[in-house]
Length: 599
Image (tube, rainbow, N blue to C red):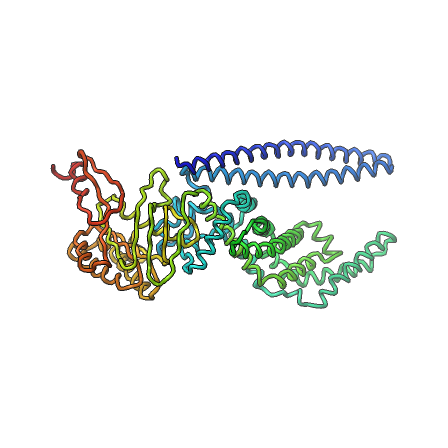
């Protein structure tokens, strides 16, 4: 185990012990709280019993105090339960981190829902179990997961944006307690699918009742009128004026009942998801930002947003009280409860709807930043890349390896390309490491452009988009053969390159569905196309005939290889990248060894 992994293991184990102790303490407090609540309730019941038997001021005082104490203890128990749940989430977070650094699967979502088969996502294992998304993800909200997914499939390309993200990741990575609180608060409430869609639909509707000025006046006058005549009714039994006021209130509420019901379907029962987002924003607003401009902007947005979203959560909760029959009848009769809720909600909407989507985006940015910062903290031996300015494309890296491969199994390689060499022809036998190396460069470039550290001793690069053709599959639904699917992918690569944008192109063994001569000719023509464009290409192949292109295009096409070694009747791979052309033929050797062919 690496030295930094041992240090992190001790760190997370201590965190686990700490939160386990706190959870046990909260459990004991909850038991005591339950005993106190029962005692307060018994005291209340006894006080009321004797009060019914014999009216006395001291019994009234005892009953009132017992009731107040009982209410206080109920609220205290709710707070204790929330704290226990929060610390259980923190325990889960640290147990999960301990598992991740020991090569166990991350318990958070693996992002398979984002894997639509397009772009490089399938080729580079960006989504799904054991993917890059799965390694990084610590997000509890749909916006957090979506923002992380979008970053991985379309990372920033401008140097200033990448540097800004690097600064933010560096500043946030050491703030372990703050980062874990962001995740733990997010896990307090599970976001149900469609909740935010309903809120956005509600925001897109107009403020129908809030714009009626007469209703704004009546909302205050009628409750005062009804309350006055309710007290008068209690005092002397006069009910006529009270019935008139209640009738007017129910007439107004009834005429708007359909609209009120529709509004409740959209914004009702949304307290949990709104609290989830508000708690994440509130927690993050207390993070240290240092000189990181992105952190400062996110903090400013979070500080403005969390109180306002919390207010909407409270209004949603109050609106849900209409489902209580007693509240519905009593409060609608006296204070126009439904209308009061709708008017306050529409007032909130009129003031804040323009900013709401930006606040949700802020939550997504915070969570995705949290994911990369956690990755950086867990891999302190990784290096932050150096960005290269200028028009000439270049990648240079020392000891680069694949971050998804366990540390004790990684084989690192040195690599450089660009300025002027544009295409590296990588030959090698089956299982020698060609495809893994292509993915190694692709995944590390994505991490680099997201502002994260990369699995290397050094890594300098020009910002580039990625194009890949590694994993091809046919489609019965689209009536597409394997060969045609591959041709379409190669066609798409050329179309993208024709835009003139800078690209890193990763190609693995094209034209497998045709004869050898046709394959060699087609591959050669495709390579000659690639070197015309603004790209660096790694072209992996078994076709040794293509190696002659190096002599025809010196300084532009270079031969590299992964070699297999046959020693003492056994096949070995060292997975090291070398200059030159692969020579050993492991397929023939393995077929003989397995008895498929003759000796």
